[in-house]
Image 1 (cartoon, rainbow, N blue to C red):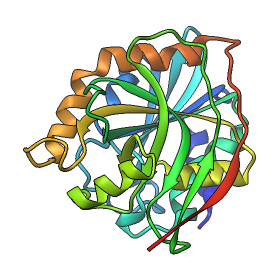
Image 2: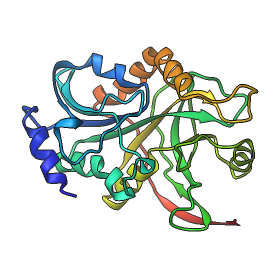
Image 3: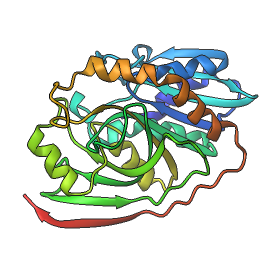
Image 4: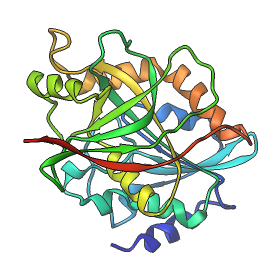
Amino acid sequence: MDYKYIIKKIDQIIDQKPKVCIILGSGLNDFCNKLENQKKINYSDISYFKKNKIEGHSKEFVFGYINKIPILVANGRLHYYEGYTFEEVGILIKVFNHYKPSKYIITNSTGTVNKDWSIGDFMITQKFLDFSFIKSNKHRYYYLNNEIDIKNKKLRYGTYTYTIGPTYETKTEIEEIKFLGGDVVGMSTFPEYMMCNDLKINPIILSCITNYAAGIESAPVKHSHVINNAKKSKLNFIELLVYPCVKVEYRLVFNTTVHGSLYER
């Protein structure tokens, strides 16, 4: 796994080091339309990446500017369930870290377990619940304590629950996740966060709530609904995402601690 090869490819499309680096989740690629003077390179042009057939991921690096601020976007991510290891999924963070940007932003589309939250809301992750059981037979919690000084009635703070995927969770699993304190559930982001943690990087993690988790409503969860609802939220999402990109100073409190749960399977 040679992330330096990916950097060499990206260096062909950038004319200065990015100050902001972003990973875009499912259906959130419309943010790239805000970038001026765009330059792109497809993942397919980089031999490291497996062929990605996941709907809603454009599979490209995009470089451009907002208010003259250089921004590098990974428009589409990697997933553990595609056959990558945790470290391989986190390679996008390694690539970003080469440029030492002032801000790292990781986004995703998620389902919520909370009936009083709405589709189209957004969440800043303050805690992870690892529900994957990849490295341990215990649930583990990772506390970020992140806060962003943005006033938006749709912005919430809470716990992101990571599951392996690619299938959606069962009703029983969602009930368990809710019992354990999860607010949203998704199949990405946590491996990237673990790489951030290893590299002592302070990321902003922004979730777009696109659906209710399995069992919350009678209708089954479908990926097409996730994509469509993400696109319906694009204007609010872009507004939220542009703010930390262009704001020189913003409040970001970061402190990570890890606790293993006493709850075991």
